[in-house]
Image (spheres, rainbow, N blue to C red):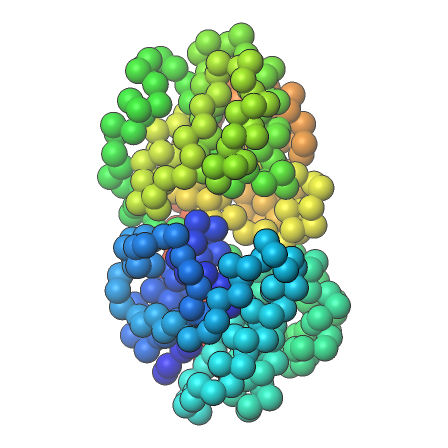
Length: 371
């Protein structure tokens, strides 16, 4: 079997989708499949290869499709750049030969449309529904096989008439958390008794970063707890640093390499997953990679009680809180740190449960669906 994964995006990228795409290719290749990842040529500030940047096995080929990079002119021509990039990438794809025994996997609607017109076997990998509602009926036929990242995504597709679907949540390499760098904690605090409440990820509002900041504000006089924010781009970090310049109990780390993520998470006393209810993606469609990484860390997880999160987390493996409620998050943090035995039991259950969501199992599920 040969699989070509085609995406119209910059690789590598600091955004989570870049890791998810390349990790999918790695685990499929690990199963003995001949895998290629096709991406457009794009100017990239990251100089490492995707294999170096994400710490992947170099067991699949990455093919850069020669395509004029119009995205760099987005400041001058605005949102139209997305459509120009799509048209240019599609034009170059039309000239690429694809063997008849090859299956194409893609996140791009127009790629599905193009290759199904050519009679090729195409599988769509759906990671959202809300922004695709209008396009779906025009670009994808109802019998297109679709891999959904969540039950919420599958339900939306099923209700729209798409029946060839399966749910395959994201995953984690559990072994990454078996031997972590204990010196990371010393970089965060020299106080052994200090408790660390950590958020990992981008600083998008729908991911709930404001809830974390407000919780830190409530606990500003509690010297036993340090809030640590790992991730975010420099511009967003500066905005939030301005907002919290009066607080001494919150530390912004910024971007860290994928190889270091497990050590940061493992150094915390509690991990925060505060998705908001202000976004359909957050409520119904997301399957955060960090959720599975949190579970593998063995650290207690405090998470928003949302349908998307409840597909994996529950009262036995996490502490679920009211959404968009800094006071409830604060109470949960304090309770978790006081009732350590209960919190440890939940963390241990999460570690057991996440064994059903490894990246290897993710690859196996995709191959079973294709067969």
